[in-house]
Length: 163
Image (cartoon, helix red, strand yellow):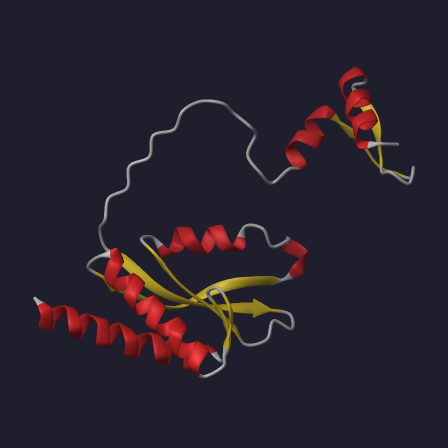
């Protein structure tokens, strides 16, 4: 049964059998059950106005933890690291037992300085062949923390000297 036919049946029957393309029944659900299962927001229309103020920002090092996660780290910047942690962990299935944990957080007076420290840290990880793409590296968390801390000190020192 095609997905469109399942959706049409969904609208006309209060309780339905949800079938996959192969025709096997995978679940029996009510309309409310199906709406609750999606992790994403409901679609909506309208205009959004967004205002961003440049203020303090943080450089962070996160480590991937859980079953057979290996030594993977994520280097990034965020104004609110707790919020960023929730964002990056929200799509891991609960049964997977995997997630990011914050291992280092360094506050900067503005986002540009945090960005400079982040980019220098990622560049250093590239040079030592630990970078695996985007903001990720395959390296022990203590090594990443040391590199990030050194770069944060250097960026702040350069900033102080230039002002």
